[in-house]
Amino acid sequence: MHKKIKVQLLVNEVAGNGNAIKADKELQDILKEMNTRGAS
Image 1 (spheres, rainbow, N blue to C red):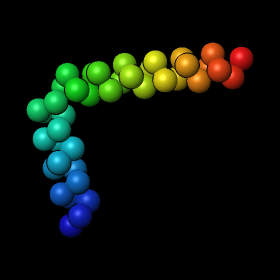
Image 2 (image 1 turned 90 degrees about the vertical axis):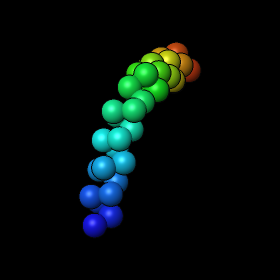
Image 3 (image 1 turned 120 degrees about the horizontal axis):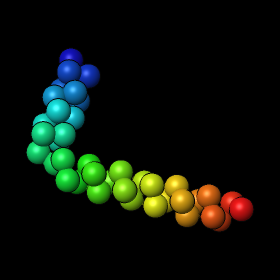
Image 4 (image 1 turned 30 degrees about the vertical axis):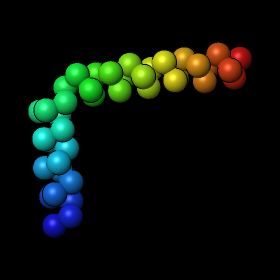
């Protein structure tokens, strides 16, 4: 039951917040890059 609700919320999020998700992906890429630089 809970899984179904979570999936529906995720679907709504993807439908409503395409730009937010894109921005989040870019942010994750930046964080990954920073972590890589910090490690090396």
